[in-house]
Length: 246
Length: 246
Image (tube, rainbow over the protein chains, first blue to last red):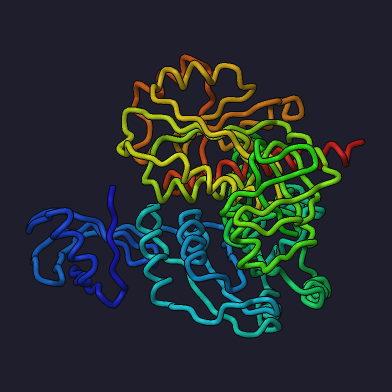
C-alpha cells in the first residue's frame, strides 16, 4: 500500500489538488493515469480514497469517502538539543516511523549548531509518515530558551531525561507508574555535549525523572531512536499484558 | 575520553604501530605530539594505555599496561537481509553503538541488492566501537544461502524473527523465558520486501519465535535499530530487577 500527501488546504469537498512533488512521483515514477485509484492523507488523521481525474502539473483528484483515524495514546514528545543537521534528518525520519507525535528542538548550553532548515525537516516528516503508513504528521517546535523548554514541559504526565548509564532504564522507571493511565510522555535528550550540571539541576527542581539508555555511549540521534523504541515497546507490552489479564 | 583503533597484528610487546588513518587523525586533527598519552583498543576486549614515541606517517606508541574487558552476556546477533548500502551503513553504525556482537548479512528471496563493500562496513564498525567506548569489534558474516542461515542459527538460546504487527512484542516474548540464563540471542529482520511465505514456513519448522516491533511499518534499518534497542533494554531491565530483588 502506498499513501500520498496533501495539506488540508489542498483538499475541498470531494476534490484534492496535489502539489508538484507528489504529482511528479505519481505520474513519472509510478506511471499512474486518469481513472487510477490512490490514497491520500492530510497528516491530520484522514485517509482519502481518491481517483485521478486530471493529470496536470498538479494532479486533480476526486474522492467519495474518507476514513478518520484516532490519535494514538499516550502522545509521545521527543525533545532534543540541536545537533549536526544530517544527523537530525536521520533522527526525524526514524522517530517519525516509530510514531513520535511531537518534536521539540531546543537550545541549551552545549548546543553548537545554529542553522536549520524547517521546510527540509517537514519534508522528511511527510515522507516518513507516508512510508510508515501513519496518518498524523508530527508537530515540530523550536524552543530557543532552555527555561522556556522547562516551563512548557510541566503538563506532561511523564517527563524523562536521559542522563547517565547509572540511572535506571526506561522500563524500570515506567514499571511503577500507571502506564495505562499516561496521556502524554516527554523524553528529553541533550545535544552531543550533553546537558550542563546547571541544566540537570533545573530538571531535578522541576521533577523530571532521569533515565539510562544502556551501558554504551550513544550519539544523540541513536539515543533518541533507542529511547523512543523502548518507550513504544514498553507501552505496547503494557497493552498486551492487559489483554492477557482480562 | 577518546579511544583509537589498532588491529591485533599492529600490537607487539610494549609497542603499537598505528595505521595511516588513525595517525592522520591524531597528528593533524588532534595535534598530538611525542609524549602525549592516548588509549588504544584492538577490538578484542583490550584497552592499551600508551604514549606517543614516534610521529611518523604511522605513529609509534609504547605502552606499559593494558586492561582486559569481558564480553557482555548474552551475546546479541543481528541477522539482516541485504538492503540499499547507505541504509546498511546506518544500521551498522547504530547497532554497533547499541552493543551488537555479531552481524549476519543474508540473501533471501526478496533481497534486491547484490553488491557490497565489506571493508567499508568494517570501517564503520571500527568507528562506532570507538565512538561508543566499547572494546570488542563486532563480527560480520555474509551468508549467501538462506538454508545455511537457518542451519547456522540452530545453536542460539533465543531466535526471534520480526514478522507482523500482530505478533507479540519482544518484551512479552522474553518475559516468559528465563532471560537471566540466555547466553545468546539472534534477531532476524527481512530485507525491504520482507520474507516470503516459504521462508516463514522454514522459520516455523525450525522453532524460531515470531515477534512484532510495533504498529507502524518500519524500514529494515529502523526495524533493526528498534529491535536491538528493545532487546538490550529488556535485558538491562532484567538485570536491574534482579538487583532490586536481592
